[in-house]
Amino acid sequence: MRRGTKGTKGTKNFGRFGKAGMNVVTTNIEGVLILEPKVFGDRRGYFFESWKKSDMRALGIDCEFIQDNESKSSFGVLRGLHWQAAPFTQAKLLRVISGAILDVAVDIRRGSPTFGQHVAVELSGDNKRQLFIPRGFAHGFAVLSDEAICAYKCDNVYEPSSERGIRFDDPSLGIDWKVKPERWILSEKDMRLPSFAETEPWEEKPF
Image (cartoon, rainbow, N blue to C red):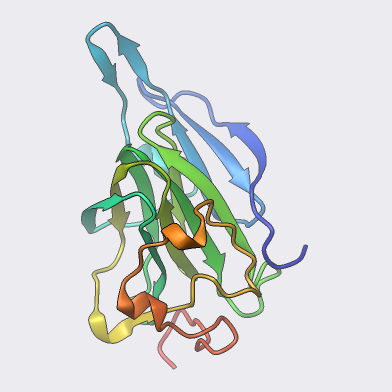
């Protein structure tokens, strides 16, 4: 499978966990999972469990998440591709509260059979999907709606000295961000990130 491939592989129904239940969609990269919660809705609105440690552990997601983050962005904003070097590597679980984004995870684990490949998934307040990204991936997203509010869990803190990144439009990655280039809104820092070939190797442990 060449670099730049994306999408889903299949659906696994892991049954009901407590009152909520959770459906898991596997992707073309092992360990990157799409989670679909059971949503209970009526004329009052809706309810669902977005996180339950015992349920996630049953799915093989055994992270000790220690921090929740939230961001608000307007259409065309593109954040990424970001990752952190050891000992501050991070796994993440992302969802969208309102609006829609294209969420992208790139495998940067040298020696991995999917090294350089990516998963791209639309997350929205309507579909309520979540994306689990293990350690060893660069992450980014583009906003597809007028604005989007994103929330995500991390299993490690943000550490500026460990912050790394890859140029979002590196042609070797082949990512279609679903936003026309003339509408991209990026930070100066993200526009200066190195190419995929130039980025340092990702390691779970310090060099």
